[in-house]
Structures are given as C-alpha cells and as structure tokens.
Image (tube, rainbow over the protein chains, first blue to last red):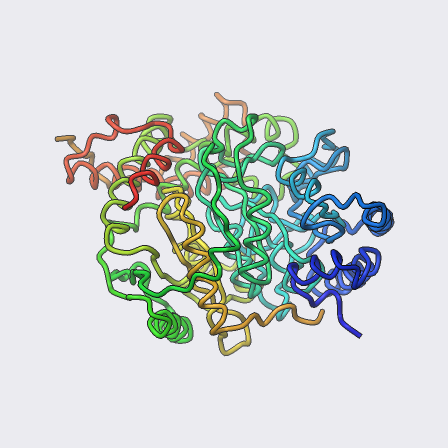
Length: 468
Length: 81
C-alpha cells in the first residue's frame, strides 16, 4: 500500500483530484506521521486531530458535490506558529503571547485555504523568531529530522523538521536572517526566502517590518513552486507587498539551465569552513556545468558588513515592537531571547536610520555589479556542517557564539539587500546530515532560482521524507 | 564625497544601557544583562559605520536613493537585461 505521507505535494494533490484516495485517508496518514514526528523532533506546538479530520471529511464531501476549491483541495499542511488562524491561539513560540487569538486569518494562510489546503496544527519556532538553531526554552527544542542530536535550524524549525519527516507536504515560515533557509537546509528540504515584498505579511507576527519576508519550505522544487504560486502577490493591507504579477513558477522548473550564467563568489566570505561542504558545492558547480550552464568566478562588492547591518535594523525594530511586552511581561521571556529583544536599546536612532539609508545604495551596487555578470549566484547555505544541539545551546561559550555567527553568515546579507535566495540540498556530511547550496538572484527572479534548483535536485534527489 | 566616520566602535557601557532602559521603561535587570545588550549592539553599530565607509569610498550619497526599499527592488528588477 502506498505510504501517503511520503508522496510529494504535487502527487498527493493529483491523487486527490482523480479520486485515487480521499482527503480523509491522506489526513489520517499525515496525523499519524505528525504524532511520530512530534516524538522524534518536537516539531509541532499543537496537532489538531479532530478539527483536521473534520475538515478533511468536509473537503471530501465538497469534492463529491463538485465544489472542489483549488489545486490543494484536501491537502494537509501546517505552518510556523506566527500566523493568525481564525480565532485559534497563536503563541509566536513564546509564553508571552499565551492568550493571543486573533479573529482573522493571515493572508497567506487564507490563500492556501482558498486553494483547498487543510491546516492540521501549528509548528514549532524559535521564541519570537529570535534564534537560528531551533532551541526554545519555553516549549522545548525542535530537533533535526535526520538525527535529534543535531539542530533543526531556525527560526522556522518546526516547518523544516515537519516537512522533512513527512508530517505535512509543505509549510510557510518567515525569514528575517535565514529563518526559512536554515531549517530547510538543516533538514534536507527546499526553502525560499522570496524578494522583500513578494508575499504579503498581513496577519503574521512582525519581527522587523523593514526586512521580514514569509517563505515556503517543501520537499521538492516543484512542490515549492506550487505553494509559491498560491501565496505570492499583492495584498492591500501590507503596504510593502509588491503589485508585480508573479510569473509561472512551476513552468520555470522545467526550463533547464543551458546558457544560464552561474556566478561563483571569489571571496573568502563565502568559502566553506568544512571540506564536506566545499566538496558538495564543487559538485553543485559541476552539475550546473554538465547541464549546460556557464559557471564563472566573480568579484562581489563587500558583503562582510551586510549581516551586521541587517542586525542594526533587526534589533532596533524588534526592540521597538517588543517594548510594550517587555514593559508588561519581561519575566515571561526566556533570558536569552529577552536580551535579543532588548538589544535595540543600545543602537542609537541615527545609526538605525543610517542602516536603513544604506540599503538602497548597497543593493544597487550589488545588483548592478553582480547580476550584470551572472544570472544566479551559487554559495554555501551554511558554511559549516549542521552543528549539534549541545554545542549551540546557551552556555556554550565562545564556540557557541562562533557557530551562531556562522549559521547566518551566508544568509543574512541577502535579508539586508532584500534579494531572493533559495536553499536546495546538494550533499550530505559525514554525520548523515544534509548540505545545502544557496542560490541568489536579482529582485523578483524567483523563477530563475527554481529553474536552477530543479537541475540540482535532479542530480541530488531528495532524501526526505525520513521515517520518524 | 561623503566623509565616513571611524568604524572602531566600543560597546556602550552597562551604565549607559541601564540609563536608556530607565528612559524607555524597558526593564533591564542588572549590569550583566546591560553588558550583554551592549555587546550585541556593538558589532551592528560598527557595521553601519563600515557601510558608510563603503558607500563613501564609491562616492555614493545614501540620501540620494529610495528610502522605500520595495520601490528600489522593483526598479532594479525592471532594469534587468
């Protein structure tokens, strides 16, 4: 019998459409998998069995009556616990917001619901998305899908682990410094940080409105393209959402890369700190060349300050947003996150303003100098192998701080710039943990990234889902 | 040409952070917590000054550019060859 939870989103949606199986069967399989995944990785904050089964039965009834909603009709999903869910409690991964239950539904979740998707629970996340490892002292750490001794990555830790463990077919997270790409990479999934403004954030937890983006995590490039197509596009209630019409993302996955110019940064900044990571990136380059892409090394403008520039904005805006809760409920924060949420206190307002002012000239310099010479930039996603949980936990000393800095080294610069960046698996380290490449494009060139990622995926087929 | 500031930035003192906490009403428990906050911010502050140096070296005036980052991204997307 087919293991329904192991199918791709595209395959399960097609099977539901043609009546090969019912949403009730698919959702039961997903819930059984979610229960096992929860034991292994603590990737859910809540699994909603009865509501999910009722929604699946309703989806089957609607289909039988000829009222199928859309391309994801009856497909069970779950998302980072930072989206308004129509009256359900949304915790933001924190004890501070234990009674927050907004009546509306976040626009991206509403678009998925309009496409027929079901929502089977809420996924773990770093407290207030302020963490890149998956540690959460309030609700327990989310652990890596492949080996619980290793980090799941964060802050969308539950999204990465639950998708990798086959509990859901895809998930939406958020990315302010790498929070979609890092857990996607650590768990062997595909994850996209879209261009700033491509996805509307209405109804989602703000961390840094000047930088925040939402993004999908999936088990394949095509699954990711399907979800992206549904959630991308303007919303009037998010003034920072673009009015550009998204292209056909699924079609992009079949284009191949013949003639595509792949840029390899000629800078120590993007050098791998691990032989396994370096070898995997070299292999990824060969895959592109064998597929007809033109690979060449290129000089980059200075990228080293970009991650810290991003932090100047993140800390300033985060402290501004958290100030009311810090004044009222400081004791409900876990100590490390409280410090992170308060760090904006020590960033003078002129410095924050100058960081914002620097974005446009540094973006223009980067885009005009880099993307005149290549279409897609290829970098490591993590310059290191996926670290263990104990070596990145509080109290890890200098080694911990070094690892935390390396986790976001290759990702955060593109949050500052606002460029699209995608994590795609390209190898495996000596511990059996995934290695990912990062593909970066010019603004709103997500289709190019999907085009290139599909070629990498063909050469390194998904090692997910893994059995919980 | 914009004159870039010196990019060496020492962290704020714990006492300064405590004073800012008092002014804003955001509680900071003790000098140890204040010192951690100051250390976390110091690199970010230094990076801003380094960023100013980079654009100054290129003769770019930040204030001549879009303050709306989405608009800047859309303009650069439309400039694609």
